[in-house]
Amino acid sequence: MSNQVCLNIALTREPPTEFRMFKVGPNDTTKGTFTFDADSAVAVMAAFADHGMDKLPIDYNHLMINPAAGPEGAKAAGWFVPAVRNGELWATQVTWTPAADKAIRDAEFRFISPYFNHDGEKMIKRIINVAITNLPATKHLDALVAANQHGEVSPPKPEKPIVPEKLFALLGAENEAEATIVVKTWNTNMTALMTATGTTSFDAMLTTVKANAIQAAEAVGLAAQVATLTAAAESATKADLIAKLSKEGKAPPTLHAFLNGCSVSQIEQFAAGATVVAATVPTAPGAGNVATLTDDEKRVARQLNLTDEAFLATKADLAAGKAPTTKGN
Image (cartoon, rainbow, N blue to C red):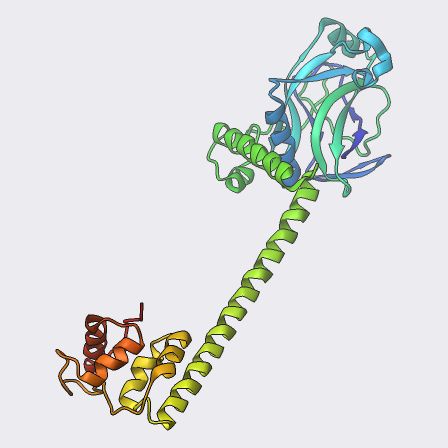
């Protein structure tokens, strides 16, 4: 299960309509350093899309996550849409309740604090909500809003909404709408994979899938080795059988190519009933009569469970200099 942390970032008195929650890379806090990168961006936006809410809530001092706070603690101070801009995570389209708007203008609350999930490597994975608070934990704070009535200035507003161009490319999308579809599909697939692998987190699922993939690859490699060894053993066995039959005068050289195209069991079947015979299969184009069978050839065909037509086709192959293709029944 992911860990959950609250961070705090300075606000100006003018209630902003957007503010940065995390910069790219490490974000130093009194609770440790937490990282926001491209993987975090995908995970955060996927979680937001999967939840199906149009906006996430802003509360007071994280009371929403405190079951003992009661109905008053569940009230929202505002709402926002998370967005990735130039690799940073921003709260955009921020709206405030009248009470929160007044409290910020009166300097009753001066900071915001994201409440988020992270993994064991302190990589930010999901934004749950944001609180207005007076207990900042983030170090080296930046100004977060544009010039207001108090003369405070922040960096220029980034132009790219939701997902930066590099992240679009990673997602195989050309715009925000396509990226949203990709993220939703990705999240659905990840959920299905976690169910299939019996895991409850992305990292655990990935570890299981990798392990299974390695095992599958090893199995494929082993099967290929077995197939190669089996083929080599069969070839050697056939060579030994044909050599023995040839030595006994039961398989003249003109029959070797034909027998080599047969299976071991077919050669053994032939050997069981074979007698000393003369050469029966021509070895050169045009040699012998490829249109008819001799009595010896008919006997060999019977021993191999071949029809006359199949044996004639084999004779034609050998006469044409091709490997025999006909096998026994």
